[in-house]
Image (cartoon, rainbow, N blue to C red; front, top):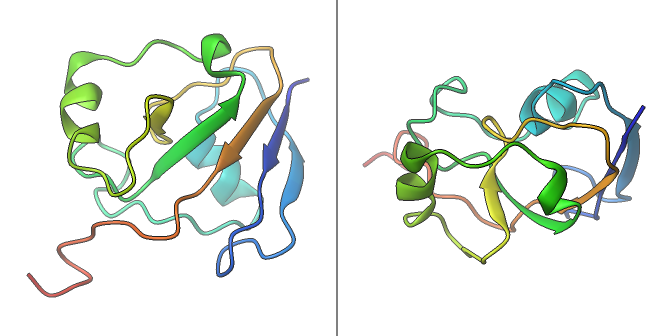
Length: 112
């Protein structure tokens, strides 16, 4: 069973976490199932960037990003070459280390 290591995030996971993940589930679902309340404003439909994460280790083991995800990622705050939308990134068999960015762009929450 792969492990999902979450680097410390001041609000969502101040101590960081090491979570046993199930292959075939998304990073977002794994985080939510383990009490890490990552934003997911579009209800995981690949229509926003609020669940953006940066994969520090294990990027190559995730399912490949589809064009729709890549287009949306261009709008994410703090985009890096190893960024993914956690609602679309399916965990396979390798351990992952992820960082949840300090900010996200959430038009609904921000009243735009």
